[in-house]
Length: 154
Image (tube, rainbow, N blue to C red):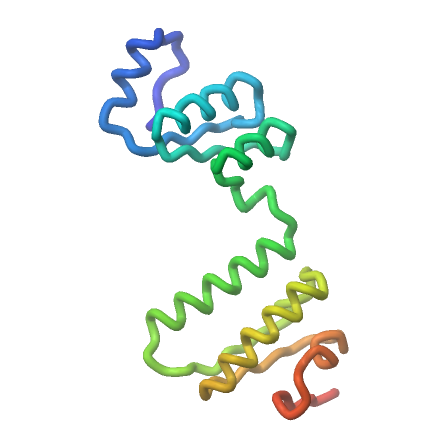
C-alpha cells in the first residue's frame, strides 16, 4: 500500500489499514518506523521492512519475529539461500533428476556453508542426478566424499 506523504491521525491510519493483512516499512531501522512496525506487529499484522543497514532497532524487531530482508545478509548467505531455493523449486517442477551445472557457485561461501551445500548435492547425485561443478579452487574437491566425485584438473 502506498499513500501520499501527508499527516494522518490515528483514526485515518486505522481506516487505511482496514482489511490489510500485511504492512511493509521502508526505513524500518529508524526510531519512528521501528516503533510503528512494532505496534502493527503486536496488533497482528504480518510486518516486514527494509533499511539500508542493520541496527539495534532492526535486530530488536527481528527478535520479535519481524523478518530481516535478505539484503541484510552476507553475499555468501544470500548465495546459499538462492541456491537452496532453486534446488527446491527444481524438485517441485521437474519429475526427473536433471544434470546441474555450477560455475564458481561456492566462491562467496564460507567453509561451513560450502560443506553443507556439497552434502546436499551429494544426496541429489545419490538419487540419480548429476552435478558438474566448475571451480578454480581445490577447496570444494577436498570437501567431497571419496567415491562420490570425479575430479578433473585442467
